[in-house]
Length: 342
Image (cartoon, rainbow, N blue to C red; front, side, top):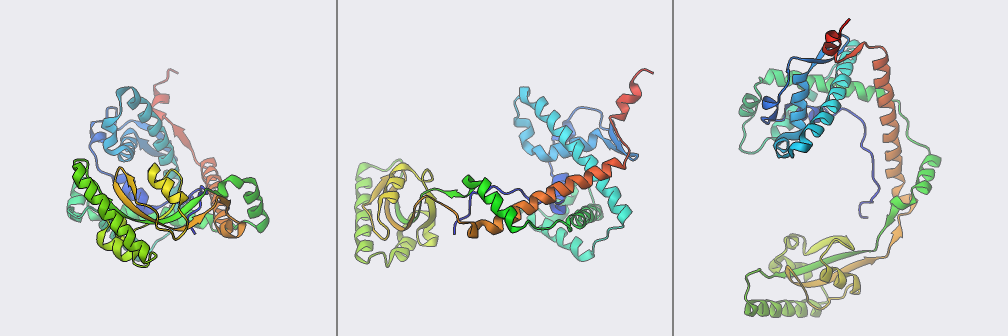
């Protein structure tokens, strides 16, 4: 069954690995950003959040794209991102203090697993030692960061553990109220053999390739598609040859018009006439043709339940953060308040 189009909200949890990569992504924009790096933008129970910290995170989010922004957009984008990052750092500080208060611990096994994943994610030509050097940190620094993020992740998971899954009535109500999310368009399951044509091919070459495609079609049709996968693997110029020519399930608009028209008008199991597109000549077989329909509740029930659970977790997460804020002393832009006249 193909993947449904239902849009699902991701589980609200702190991914230690994502935080790690985000916090230490490498680029030079932050080094050149203007502003007082030591300026305090906020304090959370006495813990300072500086302009430099915000700049680092914004830099990590934008990467090389920062220098590509038009001047008229740059200030607006940076202002919005900076505010989002500041809010995120306030939440991270609250969670860090909560981790200490709750004495949340993680195992060396979990820490080593994240470090192993990080090392495995580096480009093939980059050594781990070079990565640390470029970041200006030691492996111990990195290990401390991983430990901190894993403790935060564990704390959040503990806080969300009590969130219960939705009942059948809730799932059925969502299915009824969001009917369009489960509508599926007309689709075809199709495979093909491509004889590619280059832009510089002479007409004589194109004619020869067309004849080749016609012979392939005759061969496949004579065998009623029996040897389709084998022939596709040997002859096709499309990467789909690795999968016997299978392109998978397509809906209208996912293929060039001549190919789409042929695929949606051929009978299932039929080897249609050779089709010419901008890519060359195609021998097409339709394996299945599915009319537009609505996915039955039985097929999407699990996904809906997961979606509703994730919504509840998101709500619970925000409620937990609000409770931390309510008991904390948060001073936004303390430096500015100091400069105000008495």
